Length: 160
Image (tube, rainbow, N blue to C red; front, side, top):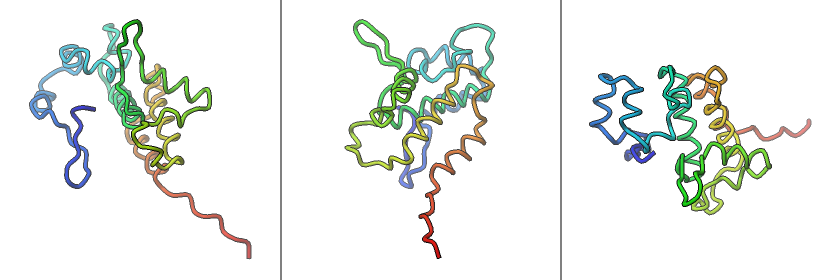
């Protein structure tokens, strides 16, 4: 997410224009391996494994899911400690399974966030990062889900 910047209108822009110009000319797999550790957390497992996995739309969905989790949690996709490696996707999944999803939220927000939107976004991030590519939604479906999450639930109508 360090290359994703916001303009004055709050629109997301890719900040590394030099790299962005190369994207059409480079195979995505080559690009991912050349970028190295910084991009590793965003690369779908089927590509990162170095096997025959080709970069597909489902790989992009995986990267988007990691980015969504990173934005909500304020944590990097992969954090290296002295004795261990913490993978954000695994951490969020474990916390949601324990029922402590709100504990994933970036503490720098100081509790100032719409709780009714956070858990669905975390769950969407996890669906996008499924280990099984065919289980990931398309980006069109991701946009539809985000629109549903953002749409306020109407107040309950009082009986006549």
